[in-house]
Image (cartoon, rainbow over all chains, first blue to last red; front, side):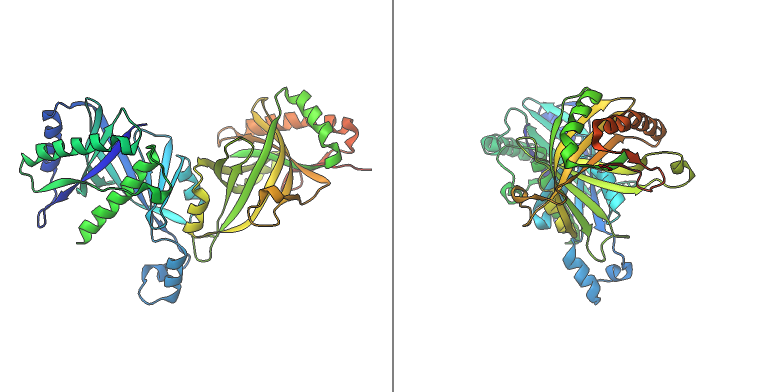
Length: 229
Length: 211
């Protein structure tokens, strides 16, 4: 396993996302010497509780039962399907700092239980590049069955190491080079990497796909907060 | 989906049954030690009340976890023609955070068991697994080391085979064929009568001592 940094595009205040930014980011990768070697597609699903008293759940306003229900179970959690591990599925429950790695069949288990329903699916679609010891994936974040752009994401994977600490300096240096390349394009924003506290999720220094799931969870929280603001 | 037949045997005959299965199956015996936690959805969660089983396999040096959902038995005229129980089962290997995850989602522990015994896995028309286990209860929560048998004199026998919607008839036939050999062989061990009655909804075979 390698070490991966997930980055997302943070637009400048008052500016919006556009597919032109994605085009420019891909050009930056190619300008740095990256060669395209495939497509990238991962997906993130928002699961929300199904309650027996749906009216109470819908109007959380004053209903005591809705408040009690909310205290009993989380408002939502995420399911992540990664392209590089098609037989696996990950659940992310940020509020409780829980990551679960499962076989893909866990989605069928959730369907059978009828307690949480997959409500919104966000797809990450783009291209994959090789650049020396790095593998880069650049793509857009779009809702399932819609074309509206919700985000621009980038995965930077450093292939030779699996220790997060040992690879930190290399990834930081890559990040600086990348920011410099992007800044030359005078785009209205910048790429951000959110530092994740993996220990909170009980994860060690040896990087795994569960670490990637933590990053997706943090990144989604950031994107949702940005939309609300 | 899976085809399953369940029965019981007196503990005093388990060693003989093990020898018999060794001969019948031609497969090595596997040790079983599974901590099974049955969780039920809390009030108001889900369209209908639901139940999920979290299994922790304690036999290997490092425990592994599985989430298992057992659906209802197949019913109707088609099911009446089949002499084994056919039911939907979905399971998934999971990491060890699964139990905390389901608690956080609003599931509550209903009961827990430690199943100890052995299994034989072999292929005879279908991938058949025969397990012989004793169910143990824990005096304290999760205290598997202190588990004691619930029914010391009786153990559970299960004959299972995975199936799919397009082949459960064939799988059920394979399990039935195996039972035709297994049943008389058990009787020959002088464990008593072998009895299994298709009229029971649960398709139980009873391997108990009958005087």
